[in-house]
Structures are given as structure tokens and as C-alpha cells.
Length: 281
Image 1: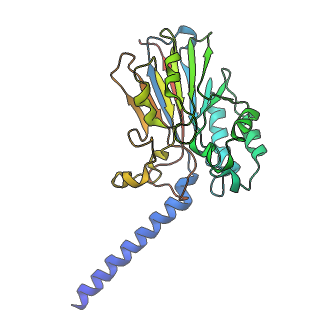
Image 2: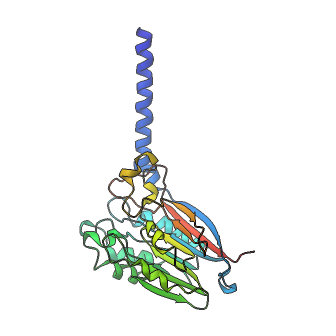
Image 3: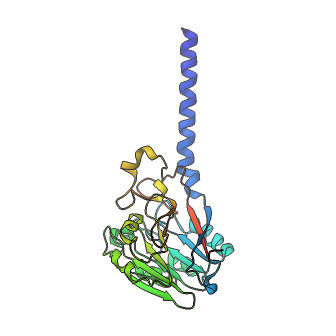
């Protein structure tokens, strides 16, 4: 009997040690990592001038007590090496603007260091409306050289590319029907913070939609999706999705950089994505 209790005690201690190690990793290590992901999207609508064009995507920084300018410098260094042609920010800049003790000017200054010859584009996320950010977010991004699209269409005619930004659909004034402006002869990129908007734009001329919002679950345990995944982020969680519609549309959901509600990440490290578009071979 004594041996049984001794064995059970050792097993319990091992479980406790492993549990503490996982908690420490999720709190202090993974949130400060940076994972780069690379994808290639093929389309007959990619023009010769847009061949091999690189689009960098990041979002959900949630600047605050647990994600700061020092953390973001890793992204700036990676972007410098990546040398993207277009940069996209998918929303949720500051976790709670009213409680933010950092400098919005420092955020703008950091964003201004990003270089992209064909422009830097952003859309509102739900946190960019909540927490007092609604009247500040656009100015912060524009001071950093970003064009903020609120249910707007922006054409890069020399590339045969259009970028269509849908405003936040949770707190903001998002209108997915703006995607109907996509020209049939252009490669149309839709930006929407919330990925489930994809279901509302599939009948339009959409070739690639870029989103964030879900944090790749942040704590990447599928068993808790009902509690973890936010509204408009329950159907498409992370990574590349392909659709069998007329345009063979694709959706990429970036897992984001920061955290919200809990300052932890587990099996869903911060992410910077590079998507290259090419013509069909």
C-alpha cells in the first residue's frame, strides 16, 4: 500500500510540474515569439506587373500591458528582411485605448518604419472601435503611413489589383456588399478584420480575403471553441482556406501578434505572414 501511495504521489508531482511548465511557457515564452509563415496564391488574374508580388499581413497587436513597442520591433526587423510590396494590418491595434499607458505617437513612429512600394493598408477591428479608440485609430495608422479603408475601394491600376476594405462588422459599420465593387478583370483583395465575413462575399469578385480577429484561438485547444472563438470568428480560425466558387476565392486568417483577456498563448504563436501572388503556370 505504501508503494502505491508513493507511486501516486510521484505521478501527481509530475503532473503538477508539467502543468506549471505549460503555464509558464504560455505566459512568458510563446507570447513573445514570432512565427513567419509563407504562402503562394495562384490566379489567372495576376498580371505580369504583379507577378511574384509579396503581401505581408499582420494584425491584432493589442498594444497594452502585455504587448509593447519592444515586442513589435521583432516584426519590424522581419518586415525589413521580407521586403514586401504591400503591407496589410488587419485591425485591433490597441487592446483598450482608454486604459493604454503607452504612447500612440510611438506606435505611429514604429509603423512609419515599415516600407512597402505599393502601399500599406488597414481596416478597423472591433477593439479599434471599443475602449475609446474610434476617433483615434485612423489618425494613428495614417500617421504611420497606412491608408485606412472603411467600406472603401482602392485600385492599384498599374498592377491590375484592387484592395477593398470592409469596416468592422461587430461594433463598427461594416458593409460586406462593398466587395461587389471588385472588377472582374482585376485581382481583388478584400480586407476584413472578421473572417466569417467571407461567407457574405463569396458571390462577388473576390480572389483573396485577409483577416485576423481569432488569434488562432490564442489558446489553441479545439475542445473550447464555443468559449474561445469570438463572434464572426467561429467558421474560419487560422491559416489558408480555399473555396470552390467561380473565382476559386481564398481566405487567409492571420493568428495575430498580441493577446486579449488573458496574457497567454498556447500552440498559437504570434504570426507574421507573407503571401506571394503568381500567375497560373
